[in-house]
Length: 306
Image 1: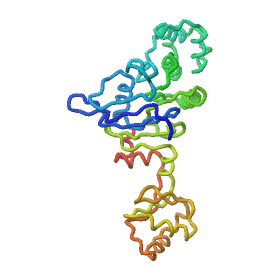
Image 2: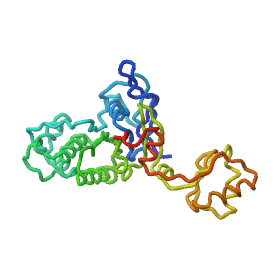
Image 3: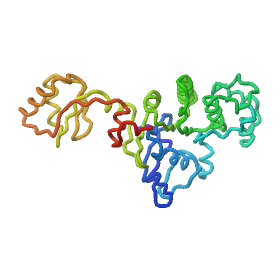
Image 4: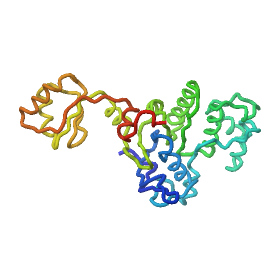
């Protein structure tokens, strides 16, 4: 079993009588890129604020596995870019980082330059941050979050508002931080197509509740074109599939089988299952991409996602 870095149990945040986050359980594995999917207002930012120590939970708990010592020491191992980056517009990228480094008792010029190089800002010179493009500001915000060598990086909608080129650049940088620098990343987004290109694990959140938690492989299975068989008990169906030469199928649980081949043969398959005396509740072809799947499981309609 892969090692957990963070888990929450019943995490809840209420503002008066409204639950912005409601009884949330998530499990983030060390070395993963964990995608928190949800439309605006679903509770993504509130979760991140609690995990970064910027808001106190109303109830529930979270645990940074392997972070010894106090909660404050654990929070020191976390870097966060939540909402707008805390940038001084009249200072250069270097001087912005220098201020953050001083708070960590880091006075090494080379350390600052390495962080700027890491996020692609090594050649911006003395240009004031207020003159940066949105993508450059996001890069600087991520560089600030990396000061102190965090084990976990929290990124709240880091590609929101960027042009296509900026999105590609931020995506490649996130992959580099994860793969080459070994940083575990929790990233929220409502741009599902982009998130699907980098995330290893997902949680779908709607109205403050986690609807589903899955790996990228599990989610890809659910989004492939497939025949879906529902039955009170599916164990007897497997021998029928084997006898008919089916090989590309997955038993999802005791009541559900996905078949990813011969999608046009559902009527014949239904007949063969019936001949075997096995009652089924339903059989049919389903097709959906990630966005369609999100809309289905959250019960939202097209256009509500963003």
